[in-house]
Amino acid sequence: MEGGLRHGDDMTENDGQDRLFGPNPSGLDESPHGMMVLVIVGMIVGLLSGMFGIGGGTVIVPALVWLGLSQRHAAATSMLAIVPTSISGVISYAHNGNVDWVAAALLFVGMFAGGQFGSWLLSRLPELVLRWVFVVFLIFVTANQVIFTPSRDQRIFMSVVTGIGLVLLGVVIGTLAGLLGIGGGALAVPALSILFGASDLIARGTSLLAMFPNSIPSSVVNMKRKLVHIKAGLIIGVIAALTTPFGTWVAGAVSPRAGAIMFAAYLCVLLVRSFFVAVKATRAARGSLKPLAHVVIFTASPRDG
Image 1 (cartoon, helix red, strand yellow):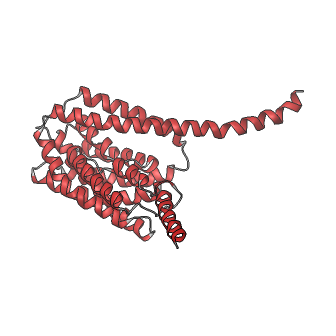
Image 2 (image 1 turned 90 degrees about the horizontal axis):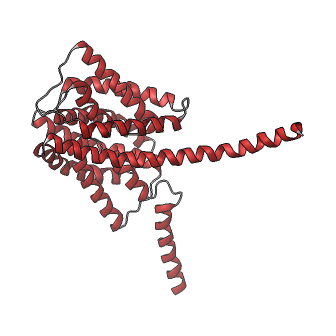
Image 3 (image 1 turned 90 degrees about the vertical axis):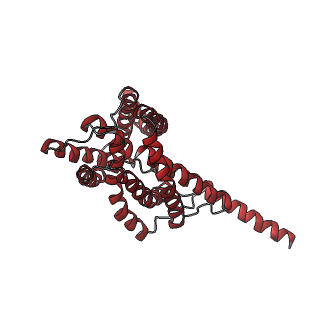
């Protein structure tokens, strides 16, 4: 009996280890420790979303993978969590008049089309090159955030050219999102300020509004395919929605210069993560080419002799 109990305890412990490190794609760590991690992640995501106008996927996905979900399930669950987070952020920014509704609509149209295009290109373009392009782009954007200080009073001047530019920007963001699985906030916020003259607060509020409509149908589809851990997504999303208004308050309380520096710090974290992912992908690609090179040399050597 005692041995049976120990065996059961071992099974429970191993099951937890499998959920954390093993192949079980749906095995989230639902222990009190795991639930506490979800709450903390939700608080961090809400703060970052409110401060920087991002969805928070760059924080949610790694945390869910660490807790035991596969990359695919984590990304789908993250999409669900982004819905209440973004809605809360939009309401907070709109309450203070810091959302450009027309610009967000045009940006969303481009992001939707770009997302479809990016998914289509995913199997046709070398992902490795795109990952390094994204790293270089992040370096440029981060440096620009350090150098460039957005105004707090400027708004987007809407014209035909501006409208076309916003749609094209959305296409670029949506394409990169479809290819690399990245969120659009890290790209949309600096682009709206640098290219279209939006204030830092309007850029963040507009970015959130442009992102969340696409996350709703995506979440519905993902739930139908049973890719979403609904409990985890709702815990993170609801907690984040409660803390997002505090993030928007912080964004408005600090100066544009301080806000740009804080956003640059966030981009640096994203840059480091993207750099290591690109390095890992490069090594994997080189490793897959070595056996092919050996085959070519082995095939050619009798002829050379």
